[in-house]
Length: 390
Image 1 (cartoon, rainbow, N blue to C red):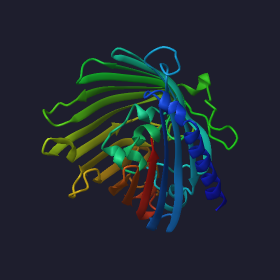
Image 2: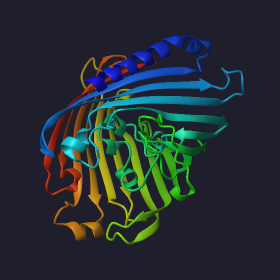
Image 3: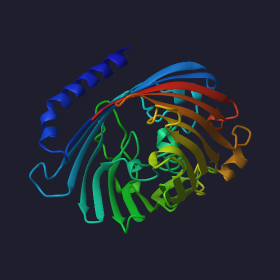
């Protein structure tokens, strides 16, 4: 109860800050102030570690300021993004899944999530600062409608090496260039190990150390390959230059871990000339064969339908499967305790109660949670409520 009261105080303070800075927004249409509250009420009905209920949430306070509105130069953007997470940790205490069925799970912390500057020069842009790489890389619009964490960031990266993602971010540099409307290239380099968030450091520890190595990532984007049906295809590569312990022996280390991945979002069936409504499909695949990579292969597939029911043009219905397999060499040594993979099936529906309020019933069936033989398949039901101000 104390944690919830503390979070409510933070929410009230956030709202007061928004109202107090409303004049800043009115000075320029280039400045934005956004706030959102996401709350998950989840239940593990059976399987996993144990049955039980959990309540968890996320508060976002996000400021974007243009350099023009501050009477400086043109085409510059400064972003300050603060988060508060609160509540329980059901993956850790109830389900035990390695893919993490709720993408807002983090415990109770308040911290500076992102703080960066971006500049646009024609078709080229660059960004530098404390940044969540998952906003620029490994992204899929269709996969973003789901709640399981694997649909947001592939475990071939997030499980195998430290990366600058929610909730722990660090210093990064991102460059992007649009060759034309159909082809673009994006690349980034990040500090190799984000700092820990504590109750005292407000998430400001960037953990800059030459021994951390660096995380490199790059993507080619191909847009609208099929005529009159919007779609985007991404081919990516990542490499972490740090040193990692091999899974098969505690005395052997390797220098560097790499991986490749592919992402596709493709509209399949449109309702008339409306490109926002209809059936779409997404596909994700990633491969990282290093001896230290717990997840060597990942694949996901999903179907999304926007506006399926009459009068509910903005609602989204989706069903997707995420499959993460264990390192083959490691499995040969520990087959008595581990399964070969973990697979999550998710069915979700985003109901737009109002323009800024979404209620999202969600069900997930998790096969082999944590790849542990001692855990039975888990069935999780939850309701997510998201309120947004902008």
